[in-house]
Length: 296
Ligand code: NDP
Image (tube, rainbow, N blue to C red; front, side, top):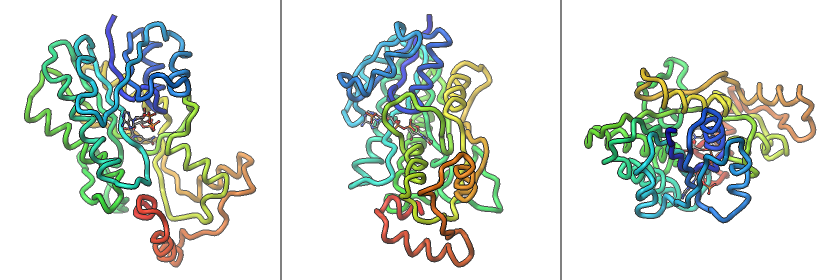
């Protein structure tokens, strides 16, 4: 039976990866930050096939979080990374853990002769942080604009993915690196907590967004993202980076869709997604916390 190590196994996306790996008959070793907390691990222990799942503690802010965990596995899925838009210190809270966590995992895998592939959950954030009507984005694109001051979460994902490819080109390990770069991931959550993308929609429904902004998202179902991770692991032809996005929808279309589904009361009504509205939205963004403001 082949064994797969999944970091951040309790997360929104990773829980679906673990579920699909167990369903496919793999043995899974999952790392979580808070092993003793039933809110963190209960949903994993309840998955069908969880007898083949073992959980271990690992924090990516530690120096060597994965140690010998990679010694007896065939594949690695590295998903653990802080996914938060607003933090006190973007370097300390986002970029350093994202980059160090990724490099720590790759270092732990470096000498393995058993590991065949390492799949890193990167992001659309590593492709771009700004749409451009005149350019169709592909896996050849890299986000060149984000920085510690501008969209620090995007910067953390870009820096982490770049560090991963640089590591592979420098050390030429015996395994292949593949990255999955999803856009906005939505769908049923196994976890009792809400991840950042699902939180955006809850916030929209409870009135935390007073207006409709000129935002457009590419959506992808969490089950498809998990499947992409498994295909990247199993398919011989898989290599490089894979953008994952299904349909593209503007914030206005999302609000209209939620209305059709029956959510009415607190959805935003005022539109700032027009020619005059966008400069106003830009002004308003300066009153937001830094991560949110630069995103807007
Ligand atoms: P979650 O917040 O549910 O998952 C993030 C995971 O990373 C959690 O398991 C979290 O652990 C873990 N993590 C964060 N900080 C640390 C740390 N210091 N040490 C150990 N583990 C840590 O979000 P998602 O499932 O959405 O995100 C998973 C991955 O997918 C991330 O890499 C994210 O950047 C990426 N991604 C997500 C997208 C989306 O739309 N959801 C889109 C593109 C990429 P804990 O629960 O303890 O906080």
